[in-house]
Length: 286
View: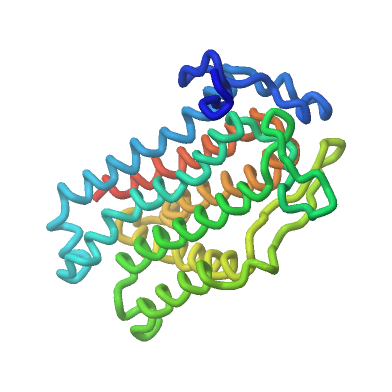
């Protein structure tokens, strides 16, 4: 096969074929975790949230009259509510693209932008590409911001923040997308005797609007939960979806991408799935 037609892996390259562990994983003693069974599991759990996302949208569509009445007769809020889980899933596609390029292996990173005087070619069978990671994070967080704000606007309504919520939402997106990418929240993290590495390669201009959006989103879940889950345990059940999804993201960013154990990667994404399914349980309770 000519070089311009090769993939990673190549020959064979069926969907279930995975490339051998990267050289950098051998160097830090994590190669044994990057076996085909584990890597296929990691890939599978990245795609599985599509199921609850679709079921949520279907449930909202089926009960659209009920939801529209709850949203004070505003069909636009019902539409945004329906689209929010779909946006949440497809907002993760940049990560799936990145992982496919990497052979579904979390491994130490190197950047092709290190400097003009250095050999900046990142060999895919050796390490993962830091610049690709930065680009993927950028699109993931901006897309997730949209999904969070759609859900929050649907639940909290146009009068939230004295009627400024819609404008603040749009402004937050443009700050996150167009703001300077020079100053990032990146820091090094090392857990005990593991390899360690950089984490959260995300600009502050993107991260701060996302944090604010996630905070408002949790409040929106609490407000929705007062109707769906009355009782003393209502707040806990209401916050389960955003907390599980957020916890999965934190574990992937802090541990999976610094320890480079594929099992941790799988566990983090399983938490994403639990968050989606708990949100489905909440929505279908209506």
